[in-house]
Amino acid sequence: MISQQMLQYQSLDSELNRIEKDLRKNENYIKRKQLKAVSQEYEETLNKLDSKSLDLRNQLAVARQTIDKITSVIDEHSKEIEDIESVDELNYMNKKLNEQLEQLASAEKDIKRILREGEEISRQFDDIYSKLPRLASLISKCSDEINKAAAEVKPRVRELQQKQAELKKEIDPALFGVYSKIAEGGLSPVFVPLRDGSRCGGCQMEMPKAVVDSQMASKGYVRCEHCGRIIYKQE
Ligand SMILES: [Zn+2]
Image (cartoon, rainbow, N blue to C red):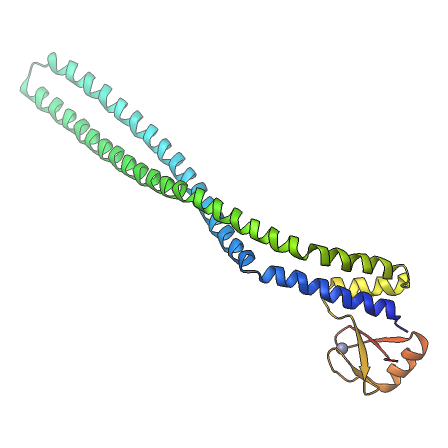
């Protein structure tokens, strides 16, 4: 036997679920979810830009070291040129100097590229940062509306919960345990009436009549072997 209190409790649960579902269907709730996804995306982009900019800083440091090295080699070569006596030696030193100058030009090109990429990253940073305040304010507006909607239904929710608390005192704890476990699994309603003597009032599947009869006689209810709901006999 499923008590009337248990069935009333269940119908109050259904109403609470409906209220909760309606709140989630609220356009502000949906909008906020989308805005939060955008915000998440921005955050991920900022993280990527952060690591890119760190990488560029390292590249820049390496490029600077390279230039320092080349500059000091060029300085040495320049000093050596002063002591040169033969044309062959001079040509040789010129060749070496040109090699260094080429390396220098390539390192400078590298630095220009790094700076260009750095500017692009900084532009992207600025772009995102300029959008953040508006995004935050939109999210907060949505939250305000959601809170307003929740506040509107709060008295009714409280009322339903109080009624449930009263009913629970009169419900067999074992039965309530069975109900809670099934309800937590997402099945609603948990208790459904028996149809045509052997059919589940939830999933409408047929159960062997002998099983239904014997379990009804011993427990007062039958667990549907198809959907897992509890089938009871209507008075
Ligand atoms: Zn069923």
